[in-house]
Length: 423
Ligand code: AMP
Ligand code: GLY
Image (cartoon, rainbow, N blue to C red; front, side):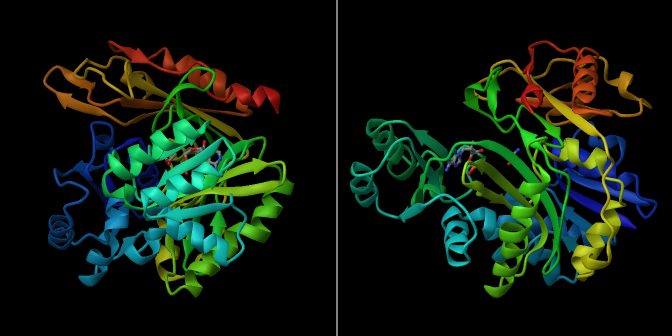
């Protein structure tokens, strides 16, 4: 098969690596890809939002299967654009990707179908939001309705902060049109867990659990980022939690989408908080997590191309989805200053040390090939993943491998997976 992957980050590198393991994958393309993905795929300079060009490319190259890694094109309707031309594509249509694209939609869905989540109200008017906040309990959570690169969530400890937040989201429109509508939500406390799943419209098969570290600094300090590291599985995701989520959350979400006339095919990423009252949905995403994919996919045993096809064909119930009984840790190597301001263009050394090393992976997030070699080209530069028999072993292996890589302004967290010591 000829397979096209759409995206350019560490997640797409992990997808491309996993697709390349499949005996079915004869030729892989990636648009636009990056310097790491280029090892498995021919990278083509078409942006993920250039639907017409992507469709034309897929037709010209007779692509058998397109896999979309990123949220923006999914929410924008890339799957509909491919299907309209009779092309096979893995991912939710626009009317289903709204599960991630609109927080107001997902909250209303959960309320209607009694899926456990934080209490909330939706506002399209800043004055109404401010009036509501006057009587609210704090801390409270403000969420811009639309996609905001993972940054549209503000946790406000006081009324003053919340007023400032309404201004940021709804009046100053810091997150653009994502802030035309806003959700104000009850603040919850507990452990966070990410559970990714494959969905074929009716059947859902969950993957092994993972946990992300969103803050930039050690000890969960500093600004929110796209994710500074992950570990899998989460020791806090116990069989009891799994049983609760299977009963009240996973299939309920898939059935709710089908009942709304929005059958979901693709990946549903459940962002869960394990509260004292039980697991609650924090958010849905309509794609693999980044950097969750970088710890979950290396542990997946099943051929991913078979799973993608089963989701498209509605035969996921016949697929035996298997994961290895081990652990993985991913440490993100970023550029100093991320997520605010950082320099790019520094030569990356040591990448060759990962070649043919079983259980060690370096997934590129922001890199570029130049005449000088591969250089840094983003805030998050690489994700270094290592497996181990246990989480502790995986963490030790990952931090050992972090030392193999060197570039100017290399920055990373030292405590990825440290929470496992408390498990
Ligand atoms: P989201 O994009 O909805 O996942 O939110 C980003 C992060 O904000 C989450 O990973 C949580 O750490 C935090 N967050 C979101 N909603 C809540 C909530 N209701 N209570 C506490 N923290 C939250
Ligand atoms: N790592 C969180 C996300 O992909 O949204």
